[in-house]
Length: 451
Image (cartoon, rainbow, N blue to C red):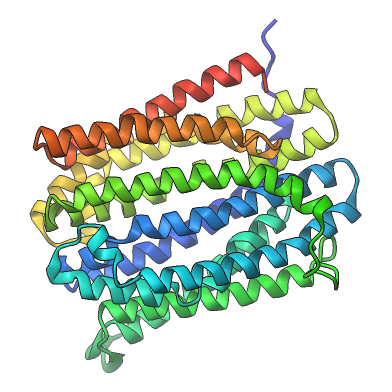
């Protein structure tokens, strides 16, 4: 007999998911605002900001993997009623932030002069792109805190605090963008002439605004974690604890390798697109920016899936696990059909927000409509991956994601661009093929294992 959906779990799921969705929206808004404001300065500025985006993903995803390790451990510990163990794990996350933050600060600042060349960025914007990248990664320690401590708080069911921090980061970024990007200018407000002061720093102003906002976000979320009633770190948070770190790293390492491998794939993918010229680079940048907002429901539900499945797994409640997984997939597919439909309909208008170039808008709209059709399928793979993360299985997603990225997207794009001299549309077709492969592989695993 077919199992019915347990809609009584809806309040619990959305209580965890909606703050994460709003947090993702705020993070995406930072990228939207930078791209839109810088886009008004011209195609060169847009390309300079977007040309190293995939390297940002590479670094950020490696840090996020550590957060996944702590999320799985803490959510399972709390599900099993072991609060003291959860507090110990929260304490160890502080060391993880310090080590990863300082390491990636040193690494990114050291390689910043070489990143644009490695990404095959047009020589005319390499220096500007390098400066943008350097400034953006100066506060990497604070960015690591935001990522890892956000995962720790979500594992305890607190998704509102990371959301509020995201709101603060976005607000700071918007205000500073207005002050730093543009020159002093005259404007009219309610019929009165006013003077808007500005530093006229352009792309550098956008980077500085983001860096200050990230720093504030890291400080705020650190204060929130240390004041949390349930999982505030203990005083001896700098002393390594093998009992905690070993299982966390066992989950984090495959996830880190997966994220590193897929993010490095994004770097290779983007570098091949950058070699197509400024128009393709700008269109790809804008399309990535627009598309990211329409994945927000997917990533919000994925975070809820990881926490809820971790709790149920820790409590050894298999019936609850099945109810959660079925309902999550139903909700995810429904949300992604809606977001995909909106992306398809408004693709051209969304692209026009970020660029004035007719060529960029037309090319961007085409690839966005293509990828919109694959969104529901990609959403299923996101949810199943989130469930696997929650129960501590990161090896299976590692294998599936690496195979899809390198076996389909990279090989396919290389053949299309380098051997067949095709353009951006062919590269995005390979990306869609990658997404469909993820859907097929994760769905087969889900049916076999009956999560």
